Image 1: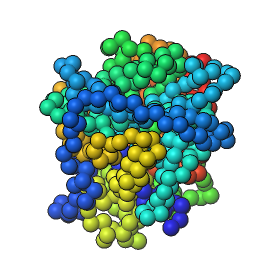
Image 2: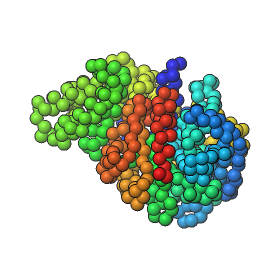
Image 3: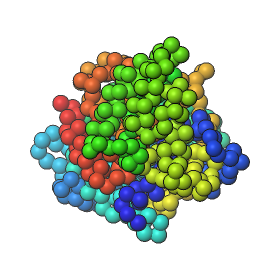
Image 4: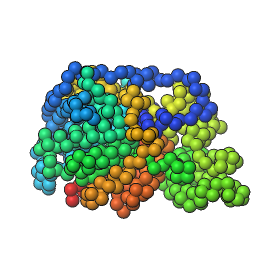
Length: 507
């Protein structure tokens, strides 16, 4: 299997909220089965018998970013409270702290990065075990194995991976009501509390620190800033957001405008359009310029748009995204993800992925209930045993129950706030307020140009709309899907960019 095919096969579902509530069933049978891994992810949580605060430390060494580092691995259990202040769950963190750091800022001022993934209901294992932890899962199926990770950021910062309540080994306590933790505000408050308690317990109160979230984790990071502000907790020195899912993108115009450049990149990849000698970056930029100008004006005009102008815009869209102009005109120039994914390569009998538009599968073999028919989705089930073995054997932590890479049960009952659903919550204003309260806060945003689930332009629009312009952030895009780190070549560039950004924290 080629490296690219491997990337597609192991992409895991990290944007559950963006996929599940609204995935249309176009040209699909609603009676199609759910995959076994879905049923596994719906199993009830195994509650802990009682609150605990165990700390397990082991010693290791490795080479990261070309530098050899000795480091401590610290697994910490932290009891967290519900909305009424009663201890309701235990959150487990996996930290990696360099030993013998000399010169520069020294160990006390070395940055600490706190990582979490999305869902809601996803553990931190993708960022921990596929991206930036000191050990990384490589390969697929029976060939999957753990290797030292040269891309880990341990050469420049200490790393803490947080499994939010309900994920990993972070489980509710028997007899307690943990329901308030499965909400935007309750989850954010609990994880923010864990961050601050870890800093105090490990003597890092004066060290620069940053929140690093992916997919729904970007929304969690923003909500944590709000929780920290309300609780009077220290604000971070930086926030890094991967595959932004911040809201402000559900309108009838902006949702199409922000999606079109991504669809253009996917069409370019599959050679479904005339590339005219352009690179994917050039084609993406051209599509984005068109989307923000002629396309946006045409959508705003709606029925008042002249027939000739509608035909011209549809023809240009077709050149960019590979969908016939006649169909685009018929649909009022509006875009539909499912129509695109099923239609772009229909002549070849193929559909594209959503988490990664480069992935394909025969339409005839897409025999799972949408969105689980996405060929770029596995729900992260393949390597759960490797994660559990690593935690138990390498880190010396006895898991109280099976490691939960994904918990769809809490995803489906997530409380988005009074009268809110996923697509109506606005998270970017939380970030804007925190940056106003702490002007030196450093923001980095990351996106993959083949990610149809959380398009690059959508997240950047949310920031612009909240008053956080390009001059106030470092924005990076990669030739990747939803999980940038799934591409080996892009991971190297991604890690290099993160090293530079981490070096600015506390300046």
